[in-house]
Length: 181
Image (cartoon, rainbow, N blue to C red; front, side, top):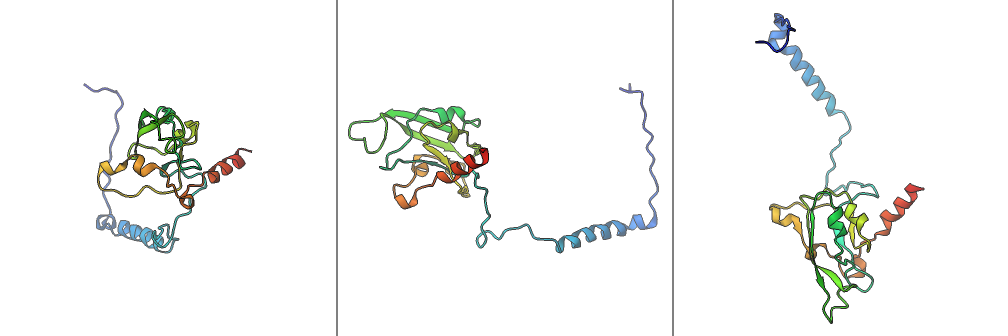
């Protein structure tokens, strides 16, 4: 039993001799291919040439330190709650006596992991952080061969203590202020 009363007449037209040889189709395809030889190349030769990114590009994450070198993260968990991909996991701990130089507040993130395979680099974690402890840099995610290498802990996320290797967060903030005016 048919589902519809409409019928469609299919006509199988006989192919001409030239159509049976497929020469016009091959020549048309070769013409398209040769026309691309003379167009501008879109490929960037990566090691020699670097791609120019937008000032608001969001790349790899970094956990910021303050001027004294202490971690800025207070383990409030707002970044993990704001993450739509649920890529951030953290475990809070209390600061012990003698650790005042390591952590700014009484509470700190004992474990802070970001699964880079789940992360969509939206920047909501950066916006949710009240202490501006997490920042998305302009760096690219390096290639890895196993899934475990894409889960970044505090050992890979923390900013260097060297003042010359610090990440400048004012670049994106100044661009966003200019664009909102």
